Amino acid sequence: MCCLQRMQRSQVKPVSYKDILFTFHPGCNDGYSTSIMLEDSDDDDVEALANYQPSLSSAITLRTPKEPMPVHKPLIIQVVKKHVLKGHSGGVLSLCFSPDSFMLASGSEDRTVRLWDVGSGNMRTIFTGHLGRVLGLAYIGSGTILFSASKDKTIIQWDLLRSQLRKTLEGHSIVVWCVAVSKDGLSLVTCSHDDTIRTWNIMSGRLLRTLRGHTSTIFCVQISPDGTKLVSSSADKTIKVWDLESGEVLCSLTGHIGYVTGVVWLPDGVRVASASWDETIKLWSTTKGEVLYTFTGHSGKVNSLCLAPDGERQGLWRLCVSGAGRSERQNSRKGSKEIMAVAISPDQSTIASASTDTTIRTWKVISV
Image (cartoon, rainbow, N blue to C red; front, side, top):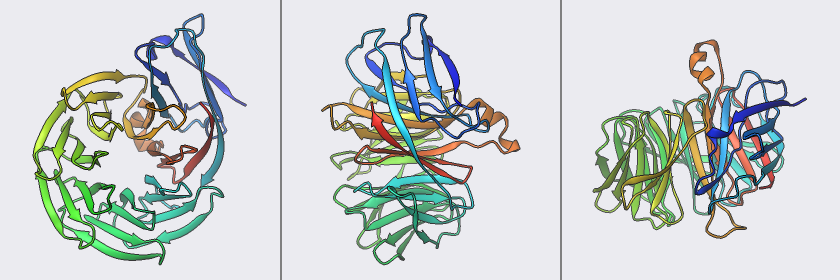
């Protein structure tokens, strides 16, 4: 049966953004939540109804910006648990949906990349070739090509039609954390523990440029919607915006007090959202160089975030983030598990999360 987790109203304040929290909490026996209700009740509490397992204290938060909302308006998200995907022999560290939303790619500590059928939950293909854990994934074009980034310092291009390794890119001197592909399918961008960002020509595999500016590990890099800029997040606690053509730093955003583990562009190409181990998510203006809002509510480091536009409500967007509660950090040596990555399918019908417990869990979004 379900347990009821109560959170103080102060964690979710009625400001200029309508916050919809989609959160998993530890406590009971049965996996994860099938539905979650957040309500501004008369007693100023927010109630979350969920099923969850005791070893996990991780969270996913779904947020949609909107005009100021009525204080007592109930907010409901309904999801149905679809599948628990099992097959990896190590923690799952990265996820990426195919452009058509039919397939899900996963990367793991077991050094493999696996493809899963989103509808059935069945594993379709296993790709081997990396010599280290797989930390980043990105599809290109129609979804017939997949790139993976690894601790082995390489980026591999996989031909999904032929189920084979097509090309290996080398240049980073240490762990490659993230890979991103431009919308035109011509450019590839990677970031690394060597404190650099590198841009590549996809057709030739040639290294085009090496960008330097961060003073520590770069965890995430993303290309702007118009393809002219990059944004990167780093263990140096900063976010930098770059001109993709010249490699010039356009602005540096400071405000986090912990590693900045993830960053995404909003569709306007002006604002970005970031996730940090300081337990917050921040929304920034890259033109003003300032933070617009800080989202709080997580009780531990935030590992990952992704963005999907809300097709039913033009101009709005949904932000989904994953993290680990404080007990994860306190008990990490005792084998506690945490959510390492989260993804929303392009058609916004499915949410997936990747865990160090070697599984991937998917949910069908019923209503918001």
